[in-house]
Length: 127
Image (cartoon, rainbow, N blue to C red; front, side, top):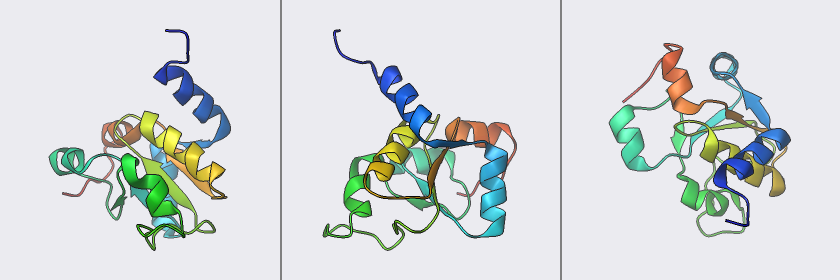
């Protein structure tokens, strides 16, 4: 392969974004001033549960949900609102956070280690 690997792209994204620990995400949720977005697929969420209060916006539709000019735009996506993204292990959410930053979102971060790290810390899960 002559191009970059998925791991290369994730590492580059993580160097450009804010990477939060499960404890930092839990503290942000406790403050209540953040939207937490689950970029996993609906089946993953149904099988493993989710971070309480998170909204599902699967990675494949993220750009359309986040773009105010898109017919698929969702109210949860506001470029001025703090947003934290997560996936299963942190790769998709890192790429997604990097993408939102390029779209003009100013307060975006991701859960480093993803939902797996969240569960390993014994933090609450719904569903």
